[in-house]
Image 1 (cartoon, rainbow, N blue to C red):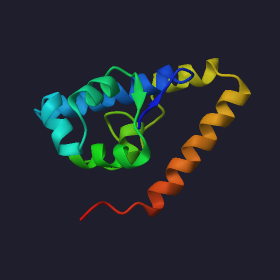
Image 2 (spheres, one colour; image 1 turned 120 degrees about the vertical axis):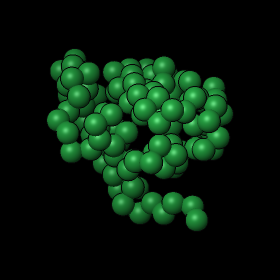
Image 3 (cartoon, one colour; image 1 turned 45 degrees about the horizontal axis):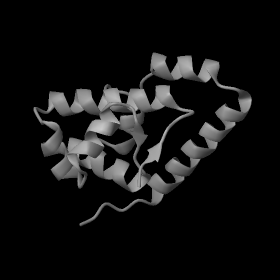
Length: 121
């Protein structure tokens, strides 16, 4: 089940914009991407709208359907290894230290899970 992101709207919006840009670059509509990733079209629409953040396994499936590494979805349309996207920096500046710590813990969990993730055969 996806997580509704009330405290992290900028991060969710960045992920959504990235997914939408990559989907369009590949000439896919939302229904086609949804089928390839094991989602409903409504879920893809919600992700692109920045309303939800999928769980790690679904994020990995979405990345695979787009032909990219999962970390690239979190780093913007140009992919991982790029500078931090401006919307993320803006969000970081507005968050309290406690909110930043919560996000850091969440990202560390995602990275740890990605290290052990085995895509379905």
